[in-house]
Amino acid sequence: MSPGYRGKRALDLAISVPAVVASLPIQAAIALAVRRRLGTPVLFRQTRPGLHGEPFELVKFRSMRDIDEAAGLVTDAQRLTAFGVWLRSTSLDELPSLWNVVKGDMSIVGPRPLLMRYLPRYTREQARRHDVRPGMTGLAQVSGRNALTWEQKFALDTKYAQTSNLRLDLSVIVRTVTQVLRRDGITADNDATMPEFLRMEAQSA
Image (tube, rainbow, N blue to C red; front, side, top):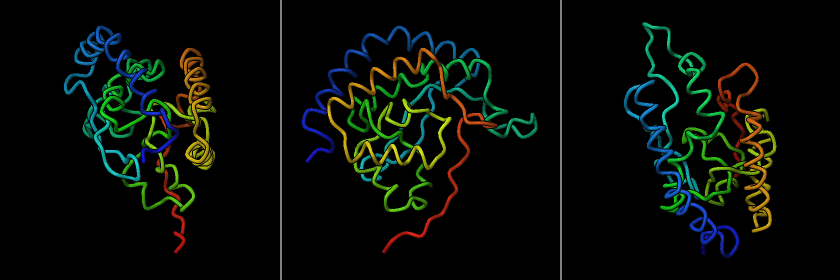
């Protein structure tokens, strides 16, 4: 059975397919801007955990320069340009992820897909965030985004996984529009995005 409530996949397609078509001119313009300012590749591709932790390739617009130790470009903060900050603050870097939704790797609403190396670090409760497909936006994103602690984000992710419904999804989508316009919570304190999740918890047997 598909995760989430009945009709969730239909909602994803009803939003993502028209959004892909409507945003193609914008995506083309952003691709040219990324190529001019950051070079190639234009797209950022990375394996992320999806439903039940199964890997998929996430696609976004590139917003950072390549690592270059000689030039002092090592950390995310050092590699993130003013253009990259703007791209992230407007969430335009996320537009290619609409293809992930069309393919079924992701949903419009769900816990954000993080890193594969985080999987063994989750407690059993935190791992329940993977009981549903990851989303382009989610309850944690509209509740503070990267201004939240990891514990706060995971609590909201697991809450969503256990209570997802059409009304909640529509509420998150509306709140996401407001969040993007206000550009709140883009970065965590003293970090370009979020510090790495390092907490190791003993897994329950």
